[in-house]
Image 1: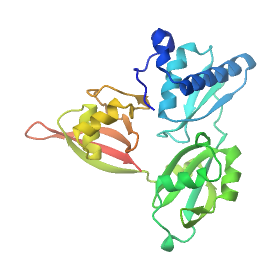
Image 2: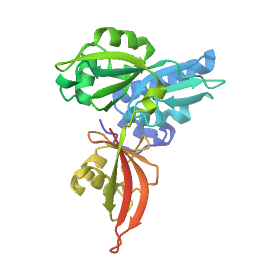
Image 3: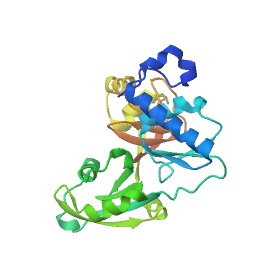
Image 4: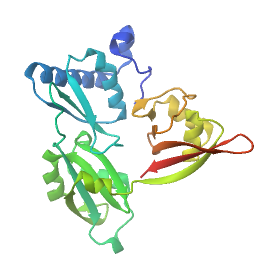
Amino acid sequence: MALSITVRTLQDLGDEVIALEKDDLILRNKILDLARNAYFKNIVAYSVFLNLYEQTIFEMTRNELPNVNYTMFGGYSEAERKVVCFYCDKTPEFDILEYINISPANKKFAQDLTHRDFLGALMNLGIERHMIGDICIVDNIAHLITFKSMSETIINELDMVKHTKVVLQKESADDLKTVNRVEYKKINIPSERLDSIIGSIYNISRSKVNLYIDSGKVFINSKQCFLHSSKVKQGDIITVRGLGRARFLGISSLSKKGRLFAETEIFK
C-alpha cells in the first residue's frame, strides 16, 4: 500500500488528505488518541509495533499532537518496526518489550528457515503482526522482539517452524547486540544517488529500482522517499520493502574513470 503523496503534515495537505485510505485515517486517529491520553491523563501510552509505512503516517500527524513528548524504539538501534511511546515527564524505560531466541532443536536435521517461515509460524498461533517487532535471523536462529504480554504465549505454544522442531528461550537486549546481523559489501557506483546505490546493493536494473521507488517501497532512515535522485549520506539506512535493509557507510575510494567505490553493510 503506497502513499500517493509526499510526506507532509496533515495541516499542509488540506484537501489532499482524502488521498489517505480509510485504514490510514484509522491509524492516524488511534495515534492521536494515544497522545491525548498521555497528555490529559499524565500517563505513559504505547502504540503497537508500526511498520515503515505506518511510521510515515505517524510523521504526518506530528503537528496535530498535543504538547506531549514521544520517543520511538524497536528493541535495538537499527530496528525497522518500532513502538511509539507518548509521555509527559521523564522518558520512560522500554520495559514492555521481550527478546526471544528461537533455534532449531537439532541443527543437524534442521531445514533452512527464512523470515517468512518464522513469521508464518507465529501467525499460525493467532498472533497479529503488529504485536511482533523485528525478526533477525542469523545462522538459522531467529532473534524475535515482541511485547512482554505476548512472550509467554509464544514460548509455551511455538514448537515447530515449517517442519523443524524449535526451542525457545528469553534473551536480553545485550545478547542481541552481540549477534552479527550485518554483512559488508563494497559497491561501484557513478554517484551517491539513491537509485544508483539501491541498484548496486541488490544487483537489480535501474528500471526495477524505479518501480520500487515509485510504488513507495523505499525508505531512508524510516522516511518514505519518492525522489530517485536523493543523495544518500554516510550512515543513512536504506530500506527497500521486499529486498531488505542496508546502511551506506560512505565513499572509500575513486576509480581512474571517476566512479566511486563505497562501503555498505546489509542487515540480515
